[in-house]
Length: 119
Image 1 (cartoon, helix red, strand yellow):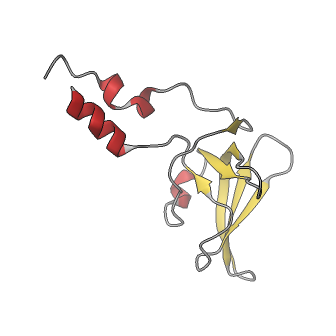
Image 2 (cartoon, one colour):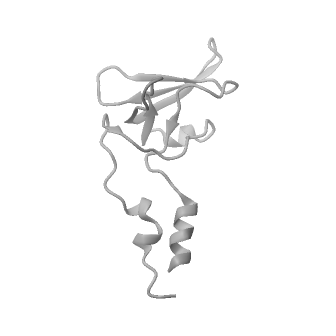
């Protein structure tokens, strides 16, 4: 070991710049929030996928509600991105494609392991 292990070098995602503001467009995001974990994210910041065919777009918002719609047989997320109109994102559990919600910051364990092994 060459020197003292610095936690800021090992886990840069934990100590990065402040979180994006609600409504702000971002370039990166964390992993997809699983359907089962979604109720635990109510009231927290999430990243919405608003991509088109020609460009990837991601916007920060707050997950306000997550509930089941019996008539559509899907789960619906209500996300506030700072505007008057809320975003409604349908999540079909048997259909893997479509709009997703992501955690705010990416987590790259292999990259952090490399940083730890180099010190």
